[in-house]
Length: 295
Image 1 (cartoon, rainbow, N blue to C red):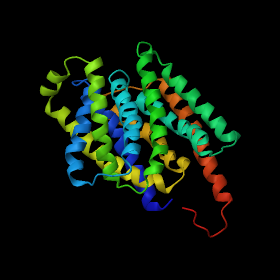
Image 2 (cartoon, one colour):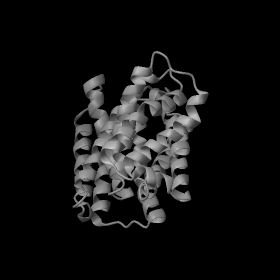
Image 3 (cartoon, rainbow, N blue to C red):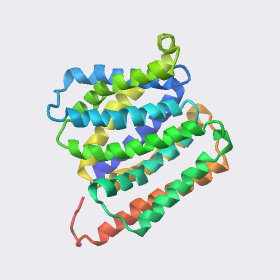
Image 4 (cartoon, rainbow, N blue to C red):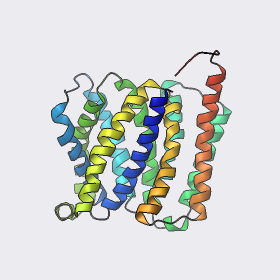
């Protein structure tokens, strides 16, 4: 990868980690489905008036609104009300093995025994994380976070079919399609959301603005720009940084604490993902002629 793209990818990971912390903070006042609906409304207001309608791609963007929007963001925002930032960030790591498995199924991207081992190790690490005592009463929400990770892995594959579309058009119109889905989920599963939104504090609105503008427009805009340029394991490798940033932000900003489940499970999970990513990268490098620049 080009150095500038590497720097951008690292920046996106820090921004995404801050999204989990901001969501945890705002979810203390606004229920998850309502919160993500408001976030998407911020994106629509700030983007859609300034982008063209991506004719010919709306069906694909609608599909992305289901996976990236409702399933990934929606379920994660509901889950984050009940699990810690560091835990959520580690569970999201399973998006890497999920993406590889989906790439094998839909794009026939083969992988060897080392990546298969990495997949098993990463899932074992998440099992350790989910087994921490603090999650005994929150297993449903840990499961939601896991489904969210699966959806995120799938969404990254969907983006391959949108390489020629403006990243801002994708973001804006995905939000347009996602809002009715999320509002419906809020109507079905939540109560008191209107009052919660009306009475939200300034800090919560700042968190929403951060998630809607910095995370969604800047962060995901940069990510949509990078994903079509590289193979799945190259781009997804940077998500190794999310739990590092996430755990740190949870401790510094939200006063969360660590235990051996998080530390051990986190190391095993990241180790498994690292096997998937860097073993594959090394093999491609060995197959490249000296002086060649595959990235």
